[in-house]
Image (tube, rainbow, N blue to C red):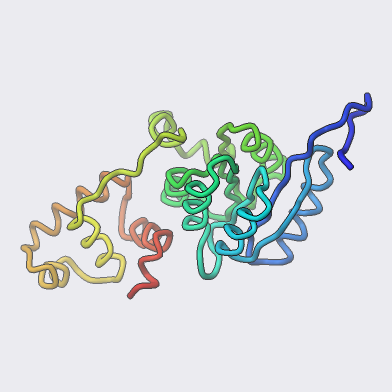
Length: 226
């Protein structure tokens, strides 16, 4: 039965799927969200693959998606969801507030990004915004991002920066821990050329050091290939 307002008008509940590899977290989220008069948790998933599969079967309005999960992570799952079911809103709920994580999830098509350490009201607002087809950023995340970045990357039409094959090769090898000299030897290029590819790739992706590169590689699933 649909919940109702104080005036007795039926409220159409937002149907939500929870994707997080920790059962305790999912239980807490279920209690929080189902306490809202306009929200209903219809399914749970412990990894990205299950989230995609159950979303295809149940067609929830919103998926609350963790980033770091075993197997298929939240980034990969969000990309698949956006391709298969663009009408489903994705709210990222993560402990990571690093720019690289936020950027990649938004580029993948997430409508909202909320920190697990923030007040529960942030998640509630984000779910309602995503269900309405709107964007939402946790206030603590938004403070770290410039207005220019928001204009360029949070819209649904935002496109992933295009990296050349060599730029991708260099970033991947850097993430695996190889030095510029080792990368140059493996790709049969000069060290100076490697440095140019590295600088171009980092500029395009707005990465600021090796730590950002490793985080980006983790999101892309590159480190699982080594």
